[in-house]
Length: 236
Image (tube, rainbow, N blue to C red):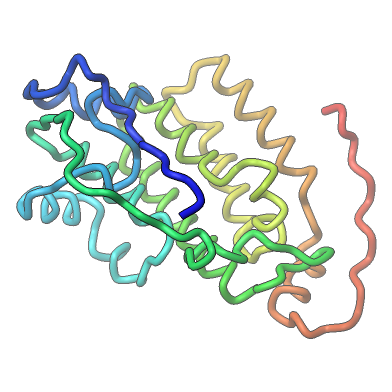
């Protein structure tokens, strides 16, 4: 093992204290993790009843799509929303080992010129993210306090490391659509709308025309080169 990382976002002041709804969900929505921990499932233990409530809250139509990527973000969100009480403890119950070389995300973000290196694998995982993103945004649509959480979910893979691959996937228009829809969210503040607009313009700098993108994703063996895209104004 190359290194050991102790992953803990809980606030020690909350250890062994019972925290009840609705503070659990509010805390999670506001981007605070002192009583809920991370957005991953591995730092928590759930009882069966909570899992059932969370799964029903999300909806069977989502689970029936054979999600294999970022499903822990969706489940953790639903669990925090439906949990009636939660207790964080200082004990280390188990050690979680992982090998990045065998991770399901290996190769997902690799690109070759204006195409994905592994189109089938990448499109599946990026597609899973779009399904999860759309459902979370829908489930928090009537939650005015969820702005920070919605922004976190939108930008989970919205960094420079990931966007080139997303822009070369068949799901980029879907991502742009969801960002545009988020701009119109009725609980937005003027400052948040300003930030979303700025992010949307930033995304357009990664744009590849649909014909070029679909040709290189659906026909990865194609030897024809796409036309170079017009240079966009970087000062928007």
